[in-house]
Image 1 (cartoon, rainbow, N blue to C red):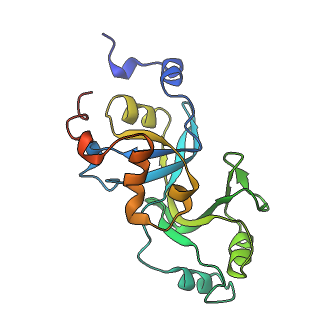
Image 2: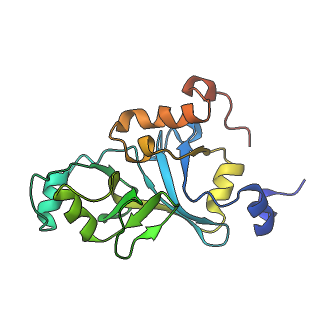
Length: 201
């Protein structure tokens, strides 16, 4: 049997097509890592280019939304509309990214799916603070990324991640503590069922 180290890119592409626009749900295999019980919305994923996404279920303890808006000189503070602020990942933690529904166009925004757009522009935060803007939005500070082939190995060989469909409630909702269980429920799994199903790569 061929070792995993000799799995070709084309073979991996067949086994794991692009997961952009879907959720990665941490399995118990990641229980002793910083990604334990995380849910990540993937914004980009190719076998040759790697992957990038945002943790959507870890509320950023500090600074809060009001403080971030003050730092960015966005008014009014407090804002007319409040959105969730997530610790998006271990990379670029001082940089904010806004995931939002595509019912509002952002200058320089990147369409992830027909329903979700990624923006690094302050315009969307300004508009939200004023009470307008997209129906749904989440501010993520920092992001997570994988090099070429790394995510495929973590899914296929290490049983680190489960893949689940993204819903507005999970991506944009403010029930941060409940999102991991919600994502598992979307693929008909209970956390109790996962014990013993991982670690067999």
